[in-house]
Length: 372
Image 1 (tube, rainbow, N blue to C red):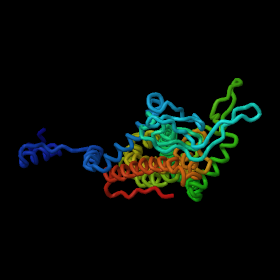
Image 2 (cartoon, rainbow, N blue to C red):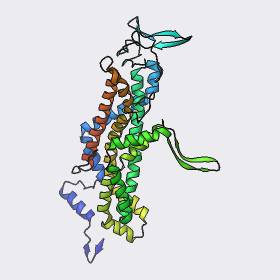
Image 3 (cartoon, helix red, strand yellow):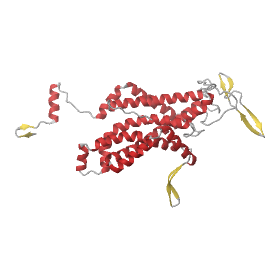
Image 4 (cartoon, rainbow, N blue to C red):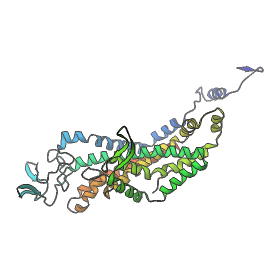
């Protein structure tokens, strides 16, 4: 393009000149996501941790396959008086347990020590041993992992969505809206996470969660029983809202007066469009990092709630309930709690390492942490 007898100098012209001086290779810009992906691929520890987490998820999802083809023992099947063949010899699942007749009714009298890990010596049954009720620990470990991972990931997703919406509203509108949302964050922040979660979980498990209205005789809204996993999901999501909402609100406040927001406003863009097409993409990297960190904390919180009886209810399995069930038998049958503890450690450690690697890839200078 010629103007006043001279060629116009543009960024493309500069790239072409640099390519001529650099051996003919044209300079191409890379998006921040491409650069972050390149950094993440170089972090082999983070990628290995993510692979470990995916492996744990896949194993837990295959729990029905394990029961059907390996253990043949259901997740709540009590077999106190059963025997298994170990190396050609019958062995009781619970030592000294037997069945007696009381008032004409067969009654199981539990014995002392559950059978230990068999590692396929019993033909696939009780690979990790049995608990005090004669249930297969490996089966309950896999099904418990399904519940713990479902609660952790789902509560983190619900928490992230709610936090992003509140942070965008507070940071964009400011004024009274920001004051109300900030005080809401401060109110939740003032309580220790585990204590607030125990109080809410215990209260909701008594009568459940029933919020909605009736239309033509039909109830529309939330109608959850006290034993529903969604109760624990909503409790954990609620208590972690300020841990995502507060840092995101600060970022939105910093972006609110930038030139691209003023340009979008001058072009007639409405508030929803500015929030979700201009502001949200600019905080997406922080949202992604915070989500991964919240998943690990949500799993630990679920474990703590279930251990204290305010989360998943027995006999439904979770890693927290398995630790609670085995605490009285640590000396005689440590496998009841040991394998659940190992699963928690591996899963949470893998998520945290991957979250740190993701944070370093997206913004090496960022120092995002979740503390409670």
